[in-house]
Length: 469
Image (cartoon, rainbow, N blue to C red; front, side):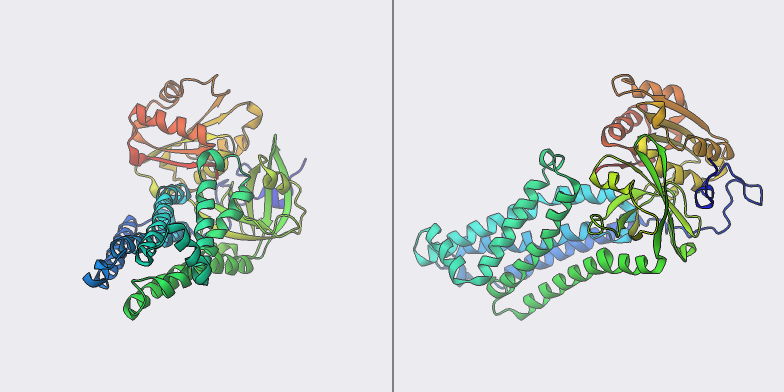
């Protein structure tokens, strides 16, 4: 079958008029390199903010208030609430997809920090509710349960905050790995949207009733600025910029092509794509504006660098959304968020590289290959359960040939390829002198990264992206 113009433009085997299979008529812009110093500045700013909110909270307390019945208990409740709320805002900022931070940590890194941080604000806010209730009960000389009912019934802001806390606890439970992996991604995503509602419900309660806020305008102003800055950051990076870019590039589905068993590529056509800054190895969150799909955005990698006016993403059908993508009709409009991902040429530390792709992980590494210079001499391993799953094999081979690298296949189940460390040593003898890029499903990535570390590849020379939510 003769490929269409849109399909052929991504094929490196089909030479351009210049005769160079790797030359593009219009070179796309590249994303800026990561600046780790910005990550350190952000961490210092977070710590400085935490010290400030704690200091302000302590400064407004008086020894007279502490000496009253329930004073100490209420103070503990106030402090746990303040620290918990501050950490909750930080938790939201971590996944606000701020480009400068995302380029340093990548999506995997941001999510890891988010998951490590999330138990703390939830635990502290639960402690806040318990200690404040006990403190108020001690002051009123009544039972804690009676006082809890009185607080909820007498103060509307407390009821709203209780609902907000309940939502946070529900989200925290749903994020436990054993539960999260059993939920559909769509269900998990919708649940996490409620964190914004939970924080909004808590805002009025904090300012109206918090002992550290009542009668202290400086503290109220400081917290109002923190809340406004957090909300503004989320609105800009999670909503504003994606909407602007989606209108600017005006992407529509051109065609859907089957690449292999349960794998399809979607060719998109847009405008001004020469201005889209993207690096090989990155991905977008795609929102197909059609019935049943418009309300959710899913991450899929570019399987080639942009060829204005075309983009290509490739999807393995493993869930409801990815199966529906295979049925998308030409002409469907598409909104985008991104690009995201830190597995790019920017993080390369050595002249030569090794690329290990598991299954559909070849999509990111296929586009990364286009960004690598000739001297990178890429040693590429395509890992799959069967040879039919080795998609883009010809394209990858041609890109490797141009960079004087090698391509090897590692086919079989995890039980059939039980000694990955031995296989890597045999296939890439000089792997310790290379940067190692790994992309694929969780189990495969974890195995490959662990094997590379045992061989002796340094931690900062291993770059990976796990294809899981």
